[in-house]
Length: 434
Figure 1 (cartoon, rainbow, N blue to C red):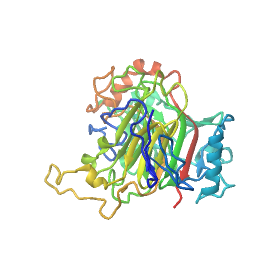
Figure 2: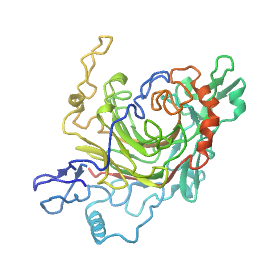
Figure 3: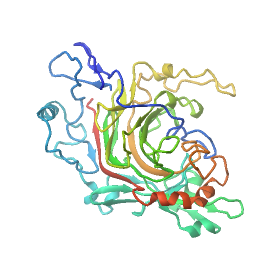
Figure 4: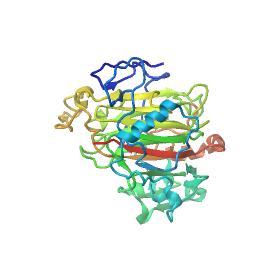
């Protein structure tokens, strides 16, 4: 159990320890952003009370959020057996909180039920080749990889057309490509030098079109995929790079995992991790200071649905699993991150490293609007899957890594037969009141 200590004049309280085992890992989702694929890099709760009260070993009251979600992908299932305490807290929410962005009678519950292309009313589907982590995927805008079924959103990786891989070919995404770099929109198969078009198609969506928040809460109810070398992630990037390119403007990894089973040396689908990325440049990203793992007990995150949550304010940020008491990562903004980071005075070339957050507050760069991203990547060349572990069929530094991965499909493809997709039943976002 977690204990909470508070006094009458304290409105921020933090568990003494988190629930369950946790440990740091070697790489996270974008240690990474803007790096070449060849580069080897991979609760507190704030309580607002109507009347002052003294707390001792009890949970905090709800934080200041709207009592209804700012945006929801799907209408959440209501538990009929809710406690009287919970209902009382809901009533308190209704009295004190309201959305500043949506009226009480205007909540987007199932946007894809009304739109001509139902997937695109609330989210943006991103056609792109690979990514900055050297993943072996082409993200598509087709319903082969992003679709709804029985009221749930599915993000599912599938095999590329083998003719594009095994013969000399060129893939050009054209005007529909959302990338800005040549290699993000174009790929070739050259049977002579071993380069190939991305061997996997998958999906990546974001909420840039529909929902952005600065401080608030997010909950994604999802079942994670099962299958070797799958890489599911629920994460956030800033709407504007206010403080400069990644990681100066920050990144929030709510959840990322691996589809390999529990025997995988780095942790498979029985492990999730949360992290923040922040630093003056790519080489000094301080993710390792804000990075925590959490293990499922006697099960996996692919076996059933879980809620992956984020609570974020000017004073703290934490991620959680299933409920706000079961925290994964907790980061207080008690002092400027520049001081916390203890960054070097200069880089390896002797250039002075400057503080990109001068004039900001303790939560900078996490004091601006962020949007949500959901995706399932496959493979990669950044160290998320370590070389030489559990039969990994490619080497990160190899120029033909994607082909090596493809050549190993007889080993990994059979593990994709059941549940090789992320299934999302709801996404809820609350905006904190000013």
